[in-house]
Image (cartoon, rainbow, N blue to C red):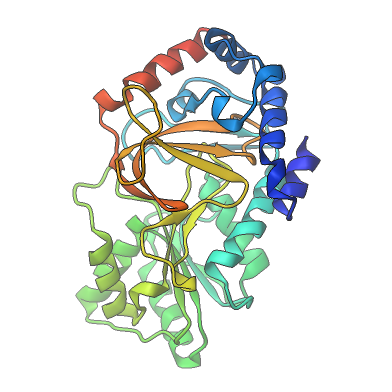
Amino acid sequence: MLDAILSFLSGGPDERFDELARAAFAFQHERIPALRALAARRGVDPAAVRGWQEIPMVPVAAYRRLELAAAPAAEVFRSSGTSGGARSVHHHPFPDLYRAVIDASFPAACLPRGDRPPMLALVPPRAQAPDSSLGFMVDHLLAHFGDPRSAYAFGPRGVEAAAARSWLAARQREQRPVLLLATAFALVDLLAGLDRLGLRFRLAPGSALFLTGGFKGREREHSPEEIARGVGEALALPAGAIVEEYGMTELTSQCYTRTLAGGAAGLFAPPRWMRFRVLDPESLAELPPGRPGLLALFDLANLGSAVHLLTEDLAVAEGAGFRLAGRAAGAELRGCSLAVEELAGGV
């Protein structure tokens, strides 16, 4: 099954998606008792499933209570816990599949010229956060897609402002395009520090920013417009050079905005091995484009845990992609809570 998914990532025909979705569900159904119990309660027989939409959804909250693993974990990823609640834990058996996902999706979104730019990472390195899925990803990116001048500027206390300023100054002198990799938290901290010192950098044309993460747990949020304005003023990066990433601990794949290819800001496009729907929070029926609801994602690369996830994010479908519309309130997550109880009752 793993080889079939890897083959599809590298360019298998789209017509195989439902076939692989059914096979992945059968693989997980056989190996994960909680999923097997959930399917039984829902009356879903893997042999009778016709399409990916019929496969039971697993709420991401289940990762905070249950060990969902189809094989022994090679990596264990934990969410940041910035919202103050229990941390999600993803027992990941297939780290090479995670790396293959990055290789198959990141360059198209963030490196359209096919080069290896110097990268500055404003995220905790793996040595500091070994259970961070983002750290796993960025460690791979710097090693395989960044040039030797790539570096981290993040330490135990957060952004290492002096190191970041020194790196930015050196790259400004070289006038070679660079790629910044940052969480929203870290980027705002860096921009605030530069503003206090009255510093401005002019990064080379063709430079870009990979931006991930929201503001859960922060007293004040910053709108995309505020961030774009700050990046333009401090780093001379236009709004069209900001690539946003949507990912989570519970997933293996990521969605990106396609701004470097002329796509709209804030519009996330899933890779070809993912599918998404926007669902009514009460009935879980699919909503038409333009109406906000709960975001559900089907990720073939999540073979090691659960391929069909119901997130706690609100989204709006637009064409072949989606826009985020905030976090769901407690009342909107009642169906998720019931499904978690169903899963927990099977172990």
